[in-house]
Image (cartoon, rainbow, N blue to C red):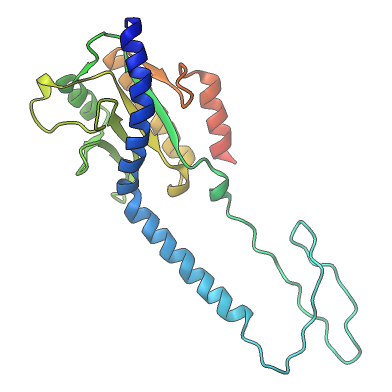
Length: 225
């Protein structure tokens, strides 16, 4: 790949990463809406239980340590020992990265051809979605991750594939939206490596650097916690 094309690829990746994120929001809308409704229902139930007090009820304010445990204090004479209050811990889901974005850049100057891409995607079980990107669909018919084009506007055409070329493809995964992000990440990596070999491309990490074993292990550690 000559220097002019390489500079063009780097600029396109930055622009299309933003486009890909917008596309991804459409893909994840159903999953996000479902979880938001579940969280709201849990909050309403807890809120009703916590504040269902009579005006003349007496209660004690208990000191809480950083680990979520309650220090015991002596109750006033004639009052029973209050029950310990447990602090709900923050879900580990929100400690995960919001988005993982890896890429494959073509070695050939002309980039990847549409016909070759479609054949390669089908060989690894990716499906062409309604928003014209390829998707990994799980057993519940939910999207695990998506693949967009580096050529504007980030989609793949449904016809005239022999005339379509793009300098690379971008993979998007949202760990916080997944039930088992560690398992999906393994499929994510296997798919990228298989396509890089088949298409004769170079896999890049989220920093636009060649994807290494060390980077993969770092993400594995994060998703396994």
